[in-house]
Length: 251
Ligand code: PL3
Ligand code: FE2
Ligand code: FE2
Image 1 (cartoon, rainbow, N blue to C red):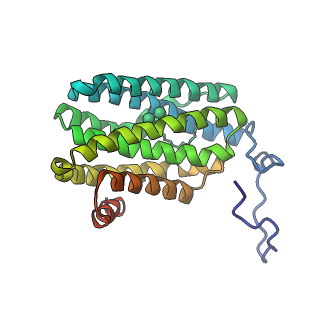
Image 2: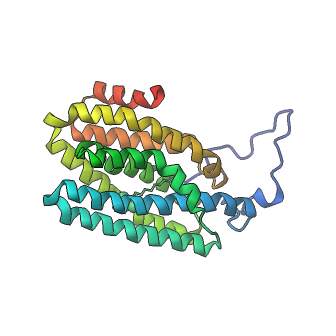
């Protein structure tokens, strides 16, 4: 990926702030993976990813109880999530970072609570929207933006993971597509309830992501791309999709 900013732009009268020595990054433009600011941000982001993968596992297993005919396939997806968790745990260990798991559990609490409530009410459509569409699209965007600025070890792991996440998004898409005639109302309400939570999660992670050289606008653009592609594939019209995306602004 090429740097989107002109590197030799003449400086205007205000000198640009000089970053602390440890933030200057490496000569190849990558962040300094050993700096304390990088490791501090990574302790939270790494924990979010580890917790996200664990909860994804638990959510697919839980979905199998609502869709017994699909339990085997959902079990396969769940196993992939545990493999992802292992991979990202190794990424943290490789950098000598201890993941801040309590932070990550709080980070996911609102979405987790909504998933658990829907599960207890037998609302398959809501559960699928939360896990297989919103969380997977969030993961895909984060991993896409992370890959070019990751350390070589984590880059390799993340490249493998992102391929699986497409399978998961696709699973949700196909089920929802096959049931489009009956899901509209629940889907739209669930989207209204949960898309604003994803937006807030993006806001919360933006500061730490920036330390990893991941820009918020890029994360948001990539998320909206995956999200809109998924809704198109399910069979929603452009107008329905625009209305649903607008929930991110309203909530
Ligand atoms: C679904 O399979 C997993 C869900 C994980 C959620 C990921 C959220 C990512 C937040 C921003 C992380 C940047 C990526 C860094 C990777 C170590
Ligand atoms: Fe995953
Ligand atoms: Fe996944």
